[in-house]
Image (cartoon, rainbow, N blue to C red):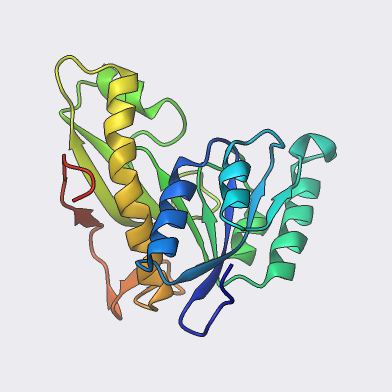
Length: 226
């Protein structure tokens, strides 16, 4: 893997499963579109498929099994120590299925991003696609936000919207959203890497030095790539 330069932001990516968004981040990094260096991919599950993708890309992989820790605080302490040793400028949650302690979140305040498969504040938590269908939504999507102690409640930076079709199932809707996630997350990470994006002390998202009054909306693109 190419050594980091001052123009490439060191990041750590946390995953729990297949690493679909991790794939998109790696692809954008390898193509030169995303100026980051992934110092490690960390999973709380040894069987996470995303670890294989990272290894194939020559990226260091680390497993911190939550089942081997006494409680959530002990797990987060080990996770914090491991991340800090890697000295990242940004920590990226990409399908990391753990509720983090307030202490962990505060430690990385303004340096911790997450992507969530809904148009927040709608449908925080799990099973978002079925919940959107049950609610009769005509639009669904995904949001990238700074992480706070409130689960899926941090300041939203950007969103991507997709139409909900009359014949959609949770599976077909999830597939449509996921394709757009793969465009959205590298874009927002790139803003941070380029020092365009930040979080003010009062919790206000700053983009290009100005308060972001509403989340940026990524135009829907049915043709991937576009």
